[in-house]
Image 1 (tube, rainbow, N blue to C red):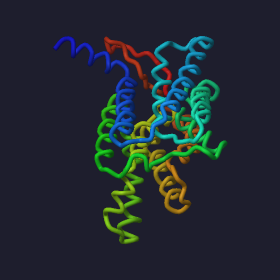
Image 2 (cartoon, rainbow, N blue to C red; image 1 turned 30 degrees about the horizontal axis):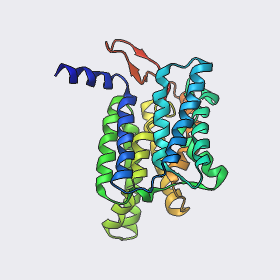
Image 3 (cartoon, rainbow, N blue to C red; image 1 turned 135 degrees about the vertical axis):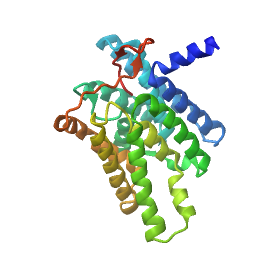
Length: 284
């Protein structure tokens, strides 16, 4: 029991550990259970890109070795969400994602979530990359798995309310339009909500502590705004991956919100074993 207790304590010492385990589980589940047509070359290119870029930051900018965990999370995010026809696009997405962290930083926070930036930047520049919600299917089990794992991760990083505020807003608007206004069957509504990409976004991307406002109340209102704009773009502008595009354009406003609603940023990924002190680390 002591062995398991000590290892659990090590896992809990850094919120990134659970996030890595959860996202690796999703990737394995997608390839083995959902039958994704996985191109392992793409995965190798992604992880080579994020680790090389993060390694350069460690070597030349003095970042700690444990920041490689953040690069791992970024690589997993790109692997789970991005689709493209050319391995080079995955490599560029990885390099853009990590490079952005060290080029655009204000008061210790990034202007974009790294994985979100890499995916959207390559999609906009190349026109040959996209976010594929269909690869997850419509099985309700996906919602349960992603939601449960996401809750576990967020309970560690203290950003649970952000994902819930976004998801509640988006879900409520979809229900009102689909079932109440249009009169369609509930099955249609559940089909629209059973997107693994949407749930991954809700629990693993919009909750990034380094790209969300520090003030809890403002952070929740910000998440509601992301939900409203995403709903509009998805249903009236027919934009695929609307939440990801919305987040891309809204996160640069986070420094302004932090300025007008000043709140100390007490978040830390990594905690000491004694829990008496924290070590500030790089986010994904």
